[in-house]
Length: 527
Image 1 (cartoon, rainbow, N blue to C red):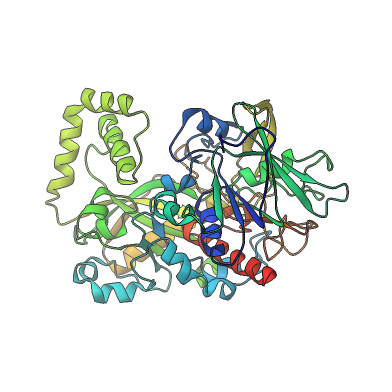
Image 2: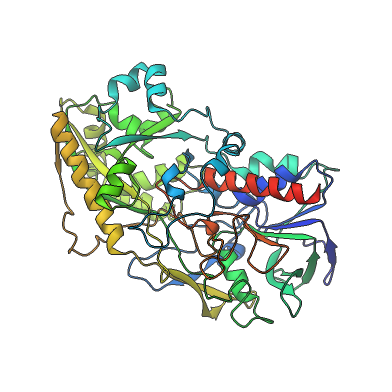
């Protein structure tokens, strides 16, 4: 892109904005259909500080979210952070639920079913079988370690493990192969979506690099595939419509969702030590021991229970708990190791290493306690991972501050509701009752009253969804069931920003499945 002169105009059949999981999947699916594809990426092939700084924004909510480092601006996008856990959305995640305002998708799970196998291939999954019973038959160690829940009040949800796939590394060669009709444009920061006065069609995209040079891209179809930047770009494109594109009903940027995650409480269970390896979301052992099991299991209240208790979807993972686990030095060591496991260069490495060296005694004790584990009882810390209820007032907006491109920075107001808190606390109660009924142990809770404030440790999981939600009615959504922006004939949106509800699963593979579905729809339009 930096080789193109100022004012260059590039024409294509389909122009995709964003080379993360959604954008790369779309480009891969569109190859071989005699379509000229332009794939625009804000960054380069590797991390660059000045480009990453374009993510900066302000979080004005009680629960803080880091907008700068939770997202990555280079080829491959935030798959560079991805932990690799994959599961499909549940069937009831697509349904309208009377106790969950603004729930329901304009599509059903069966509309995604045929695209999941291809999504699994893109994510390099070891299997397409999500049955816990299947993996218990395959793995004797898992069979012996499995928590014997009844399935009545508490069931199971299995997540398959991607390597994890770094989309930029894995698919770069195919996308940049000469003659394949796909051109990747790096350092292509889209600053404006151009339309005519009637806003019925997109006429072009304006891009600008940090040196101030501008280019223009024209196409028959345009797709935004840049996470919550999708909403920002629609809001910034306000020359014709003062409120931005697709925003006649003030929905763009609203319904921001994340997965509310919290570690709270401990279970003392009579289970094998290997249980923690099969139920730990990102524990070191789950990655490197037991031959690197290709899955992780979780506990989940079944839909009938969710309906009865009027709660959201949720799952529970377990991490080993031991003396010294919360010592500053050991917390810093875990932070370093987690990022290395995810293929990332550890941020704040010097600070974290300093904490480790200053607290070596505690670190040594914690490591010994973790390794020894002689007791017949296993102390496990519970990690709750729950769907967030759609909330119109939870939103991203344009702030007054501007970035180096002169664009208004994002402002995030992430708002949790009482239903979100009720879900985690009711899940905790159901788990405690199940353990008591099974006679496997007991649960000690730290957070147990819905009138109490949220613990400071509640986290967003860096799973950003909503802000350009899918709905057949433009008064309630930004895109229709085919991910086309309402009222604009050739503008589409891909990624987690179109999710009307979040489910209790990781987002990447579901984003990829929706991208495959969108590509299939667009290929049909060009046929």
